[in-house]
Image (cartoon, rainbow, N blue to C red; front, top):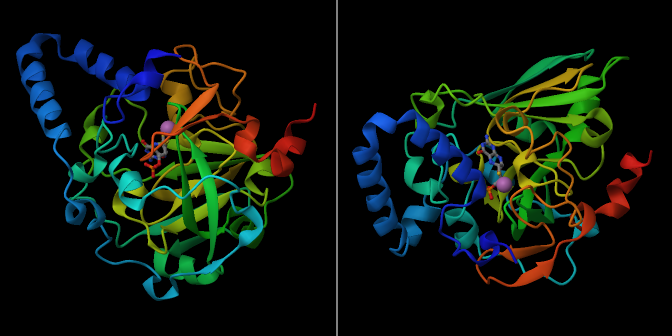
Length: 322
Ligand SMILES: Nc1nc2c(c(=O)[nH]1)N[C@H]1C(S)=C(S)[C@@H](COP(=O)(O)O)O[C@H]1N2
Ligand SMILES: [Mo]
């Protein structure tokens, strides 16, 4: 077992370690200040979070709140593993725009998710900019229980609410020559402090092939646990691609662009030898710094063997046949 595997959940984890090393280099002249900051963070991390504070991060204006809870699509229901406790999921997040640690909910007060628009553009016959209120009404919302596997080896099982990315792409009518879909997160450095770090390739960007994006598993989530997304989970709309490592699921998306070339992505640009474009879950391919053979569930700490394509081979293995 790797060091990562034994680390307590609230410790700084591998993706974050990349960030803090870079910060250290940038702040060599300010070492004392950085140390004092780290000490304060550690103390705070051991206090139990206040549930009101954590689950209170509803959006000021929750789009389509009256559409929840949506009909459960049981076609994807997870056998075996229990749902992750909502508060555990909401206190252990990755959202580097706001924090390099997991307690993102403590750094997200200033984030405004309304007004919000999502622009669909590029190689499509019908480009369109959706106001978020129209987006949630344009495609029928449904609930799906999916497993989530972060590249850092933690996992969760959560009920998402949203609609297939394929439905939105179908409405946009991709043109001949369309091969990839690029998803771009917001850029608002006044609200997201870490976006002021010029050493990171903001905005957060991810990409899929058109075949992946139109697979029925690829999902645009507007909600979770039967209500609109909390800010820390990527409100008002985020991508969910459960057969890939969690970092492919770009949060708080503002642009969906159909292109003819493979888009550059945030993690692949920042650390290319550790995070490739595909990022399909595969226990046989270790991360350069830790094993991917097993995973630890948020909340319970139970561990399981990681499964190729995170158990979704039935839907997606065909995409990767040579
Ligand atoms: N915009 C943006 N999207 C992001 C991230 C991020 O830092 N910024 N982190 C990714 C990672 S590494 C994971 S594991 C998931 C975490 O989703 P959750 O915090 O809602 O569990 O979001 C992904 N989407
Ligand atoms: Mo992740």
